[in-house]
Image 1 (cartoon, rainbow, N blue to C red):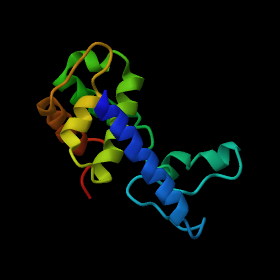
Image 2: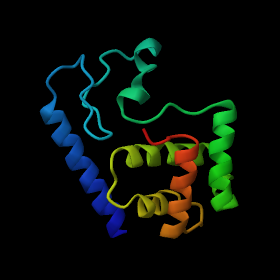
Image 3: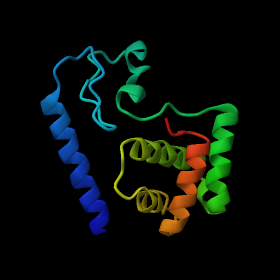
Length: 139
């Protein structure tokens, strides 16, 4: 529980820091995975890039979605019973991986420990490996 609280506090501090450092709304001012630009309109066209601006990957579809779910299922089959939850966790984990998370294996284990499934850091390592092969390859 302390880890989740600490993680939430760090994310909140980073969000406040990034918002305070914003200089130009038109530029890509991402620091890590947090972006301080906020869409001014709530139209569908304005929100189409909201996920990209927020630092998360767009939701995968088709074969890419199947590959991500298979990589997660290979670690623990119970994680993919709720496919949307698994995909959202994967997208968030990719943001952590690309943002230089301090302990990405532990973060993955925590992020994917839900619905009665508790993962180890080793399981988290396998999830990260699968995500790097599918949804968020290292750049």
